Length: 372
Image (cartoon, rainbow, N blue to C red; front, top):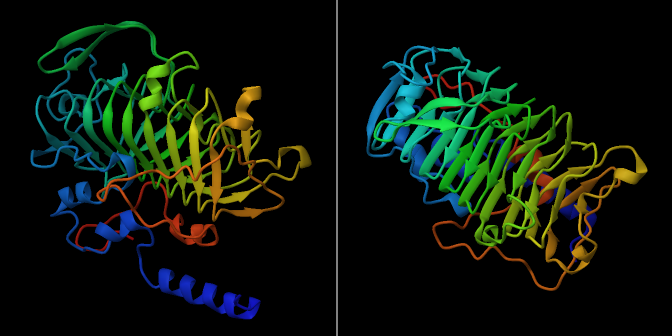
């Protein structure tokens, strides 16, 4: 066994090796060092890891530039975000400048779209926010999504070809993923919404949620519709390299039925619990850093709604715990994610998570320079 002194120097060496680069985790290493990222935006689609690895977004399509923050839910004008996301076929959507967008109705995004806010400071806030319904191949990158509101019932353009749809009231999620697959949500700031920050429900699967910064919210992330909705057993979600906090209470994430790989995330003190669930989900917590709140009765990372939860397969592997935090494992087995060769990625020790997540959230990128 290595001596404590030797281990200390090893940690310093690894830390310096990582910090000598502007990109620490496998996703960022793929693209952030390239000073020509703005001329090669679609390279981003090759960088996703985990269950959402097939999400190519609008790669191969045209570049569409948002020039106006205006919104019309029924008849969007060219140059607006809603016009772009409702077009048929693949599009890579970028922004001409900084802007604040207040949506009239939830933004329904059609398949094969990338919303790429790199190089601009883009806020979607103070109205309904983003809804991915029955779609595939979506990338959402670099947005500030906050203060999302519940919507009223009304007409909204669903897509160029489907025309209008009458929508019931929506809860006010930041990003809602419903009956969809091949989804990647990366490097966004999300906070202070009426309902969840990110919800993945109704048999959605093949989702990666990475490099985001979540803050100042109660029910952060829901994975699974309800205990009775067994179709969510097919759900597979990767939650990696995110920063949770400050000001978060619970659901980081809350899981039902499916499989969730929670890897290399940084958790500030929570209000109730960090990772929870019901209806027998399989959870592998790997290489995360958990800092518990000061209250003695809140030290446990995990929460199970069902008294039978002690039989569910929940595992903690190479996690780092601070301030008395502890993970309550259960079940027999390793809870391995069974990734394909395309989906697999390197998971680091939990002690290195502060470096891996130090630039979580939307980035300040300047063309012709590496995106630092």
